[in-house]
Amino acid sequence: MVYQVKELSNGIRIIHQLIPHTRMVHSGFVLDIGSRDEGEGQEGLAHFWEHMAFKGTHKRKAFHIINRLEAVGGELNAYTTKEKICFYASVLKQHWGKASELLYDITFDSIFPPKQIEKERQVILEEMAMYRDSPDDCLQDEFDEFLFPGHSLGKNILGTEETVNHFSQKDFLRFLHERLDTSRIVFSVVGNISFDKVLKKIVPLLEEIPTKTSSHQRFAANSYVPKDTVVYKEVTQAHCALGKQAISIHDQRRFKLYLLNNVLGGPSMNSRLNLALREKHGMVYSIESVYQAFTDTGFIGIYYGTEEKAASKARRIVLRELKRIREKKLGTLQLHMAKEQAIGQMAMAEENYVGLMLVYGKNLLDKGYVDPLETIFQTIRSATADELQDLAMEVYDESQLSFLTYLPK
Image 1 (cartoon, rainbow, N blue to C red):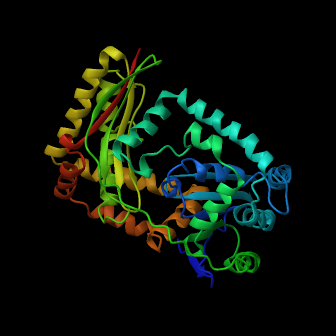
Image 2 (cartoon, helix red, strand yellow):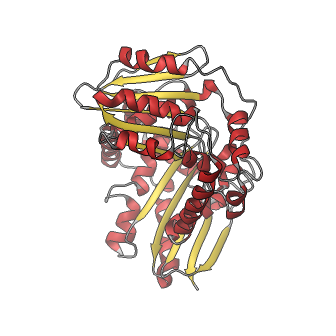
């Protein structure tokens, strides 16, 4: 697929992909601001801002924001990650004008009403409590601190009860003033609408935004030390995590690591970890291996739950599979099947146009371009068994792994 890009004088970029065979248009603002950009005492502020964007602008109150697209069958949403905040919407193409104007309004003209801050504060505290009651989510959040100790990448995106309880209107306004950079904002559009129509509607709005630069800089996480910790909690299973830091989004080997991770513990039922722990031994309901890339680092993580009495054996099996992928090269047929599976999964992901729209925005921010799918496929197809084994020796080095285990009290 061919995309188009336009950069405005204030640095904001618009990226567009025409999909003529759909009735929908998906669009959103992707901002290069995330929880890693929070300072001391600001933990959770980016996520809180995402919530508050829906709570009032100079033109609209919260009800009018919520009802604007819902009334025409559309969806308005947002999310915060370690490095990005996204505000996005999906609507029938005839309602896209409403969606684009609303997205502009909540992204750039929120007023953070103090009464709404107090209401939403409680909502976020309830969200935090919900995650604490979910051992899987809690485990992954706490494990981030193992992977990035003392660094903002290791902090919980939701923040802490202490920080969330003290945020006020001036904190949001100051954070936007210090972090907003118009050269680090992308408006992404994917759907049944021409690039000309997109520009005609959105450019006059975006050109009203003055050029804004931020002096904020991100610092690399470089204090990782492997650790092995057991925590006793009110759980019925042993919940286990292991992993380490890995390569960044700018490393040319990232798609090969995606391939390798897919073989080990990707979403397919035939992943090695799923076959070993679930199909062969019946020890887990699910097990996943993830590779997450950031702009200057990344991590691999393996997560699963099992009976407390089986926890030691499950860990040995996981480590055995890691040793196997390090020490034994993939055979010709294995490698071919792994490549075809990974390529098929990526092709299916492209059919998710909301995800495609967000990927376009993030890639343009992170790399300045979007990798064509065929280029990614070619990179995967070119991977050799030797290259993958060398990468496995580095990424799945057992001596560098950290472990976090929740056991029943």
